[in-house]
Length: 226
Ligand SMILES: [Mg+2]
Image 1: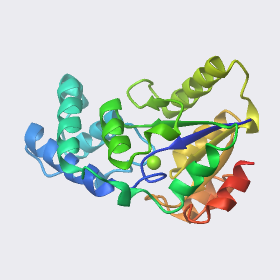
Image 2: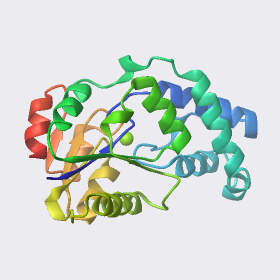
Image 3: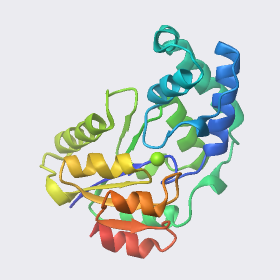
Image 4: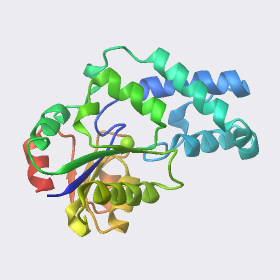
């Protein structure tokens, strides 16, 4: 029995074009600048971190972002909800559905962690129908760092299941070097998938336990989880 923690964006689903569109609309509306999410290293970061980073790039102070933080988040959630399709199942990445189907037949505890806010994650999960595969979700708005999110997920899983998940009994699956790094911090088994902006070479440099181009060969991912 393992704790399997999945990242969401670019690991399970690809809604990147909608995140880009929403970010452009948001920055135009609030700061009257042209800003693209792709201008910053967004993968494996929280929405707030990306807002601040992108604002800095556009000479907007972090105080200005912090002052508007609540409104920015709320507006992003609303715009994102308007932008994404009602049925977003074609944005589920290859092999993901099959892997999750296999995992619910095991005794593994399967959870989600995402830098997105609860509102954005809800839009994605409703549009794709993936919500039911996860016992719970930890969001970027609940913790200061990604490592704190992982620790929170472990603690919560331990409480809910009345057992300890330690070392390689924790599995972290994600598309960014940040997923690998915070997994290593807690001694977890790390599985990287090159379906995000970080190249296979970049991911390999951070030495994940396993590295896959994508999850289309889901049986291999299942074997890696163990
Ligand atoms: Mg990701």
